[in-house]
Length: 190
Image (tube, rainbow, N blue to C red):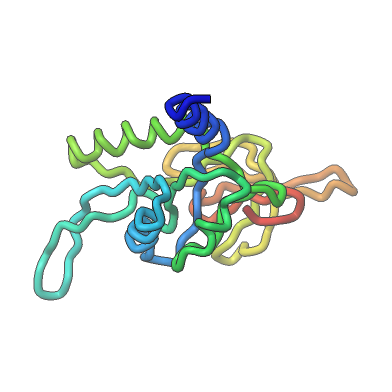
């Protein structure tokens, strides 16, 4: 195999093996993690938006992460430890104990969305993404720890949650703020 052929083969294998993953960071460490991963030669994506912040003596425009406590990095699944060993990285997003790759199309949507935000200056607040029938746990407020199923997503960041007693075939429905919910699968929080 020629040198050009070898390089081409390695590039094609890299694109097949490497996938995008979402990594949790320590609070307010997204930019540092982004820099450290770039220094390590890892392809990384941190969508930033400009927001106005008020201090006691002044107002300032600050570049803030679109998704607080998350950084996206491209890596092969067997080399995720290289990213996880980076100071400030708390973990990788998992489902059923396995790292979950982020679809290229979804990440491209985020890139486009971030570009429009920069252009227009209109910054929406991120909200949890839930599907009907998804098991969730309330993680704050007086109902903290209560588990149920999403029955319906409603406007104003609200969701209709069903909490039931399977033994007697009865349930209760309550409307809650989606920000208080966390997805659970197989008894584990995601």
